[in-house]
Length: 310
Image 1 (cartoon, helix red, strand yellow):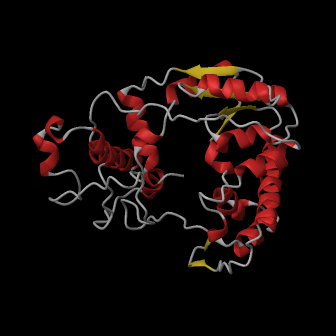
Image 2 (image 1 turned 45 degrees about the vertical axis):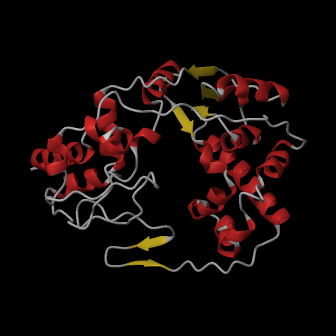
């Protein structure tokens, strides 16, 4: 549930003056193109925070309401307390074991989702190696798995799938032109609680069309779930505790850009050597047609929601 929904459920709004995210959208527009009124007052105080161009997210557990906090990794929350007891020891350094556990986790995660949602279709947003790893995991019903890929990666992805004998049920493409409406952008802002750059959330209109074409029961998969670091970082969501234990022992220094293990994880998932593309170009920037003051949009939504809940 989003912070905005929790605030509306509380029936009141208590602003947190220390919650000061960057104006992510302003980073994509020249300063001269922004209306001077935006610079005067964009938030709860007179002076807006300086935007950071280094990060696409706001690393904090705070939200716009001082009573509402984001759940931290491995945090246990009750009605009267909150604690994080997780303590990694960094003893897992063997790359072969990391590969084995990562591949096993990805495969088991796919099986768990298919078992829980047996009537659903699956669409993998496919570009680089992270999303390709999802395709290499065994499937209970491959006909229910479909690909969404955008230019310029779409023909590269198609050639990679054919080369490795990975056959999707249906193929959906996108020309990478931003076809979002102002309402789509506002929805992303509200759902994101001002925590990240909304331009990094793409394809919403296309996904809505695909969702309708596939009959409504549809799950979309993002590639970063299968990166080695994220496999272990997300392991605490598993019920049996096995992968949480692996993450407890993982030494982060064992997985670096220089020791990228995804090729080996892919071979372990597919059960044979994998042919990888020589390149994986990123899509063009996903910039809105016009600047939108995200903080103002979000505050208006929160206040309107609180007012309507009374």
